[in-house]
Length: 204
Ligand SMILES: [Zn+2]
Image (cartoon, rainbow, N blue to C red; front, top):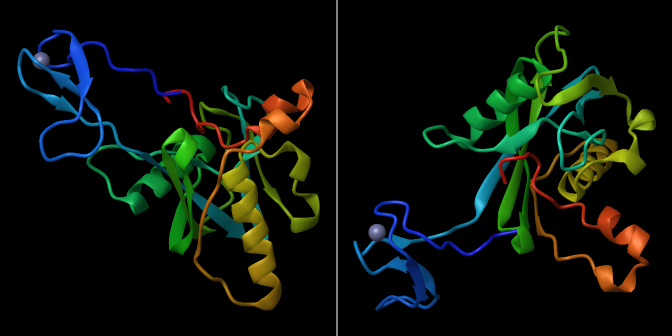
């Protein structure tokens, strides 16, 4: 998931793992140029966009989870805000224009070093289409959500929160943390399927 860094990205000298003075964790340190290579969690940002009660979803055209359904979401880019990232990912994956609403879910996934952040949103028109990373994009009524075919656990959690909040008419902000599923308790055929908090796109 997160292979050790072997060479310095500044000067290409070998990197050693050690705890810098004043720090508490081992870091990749280049002893040639002194660069400390910090590695920190990454943000995945996305939107739960609705149109007349239906939710916009994308069928993935890339691994991991090719062919499974997800909300438009992906890694935040340098130089953009979280909100801009959610709007951009929705445009890229679903060719859809949205008006972003409030923050809805912020889910830590510590074992893959990610935080997934989902906003509520309103779809502005019906001119959506499958982007490069999607096979298909469509609107789902709650009754038609393909629960058994959702790509990622964070997305399933966000959708569950959404429909349960909608029932009571009050939308909250849901923060939680997902732990590693106990895959050693599952038969081998199910282990892969249970690891549903994988990176939502390929440049992980
Ligand atoms: Zn260096």
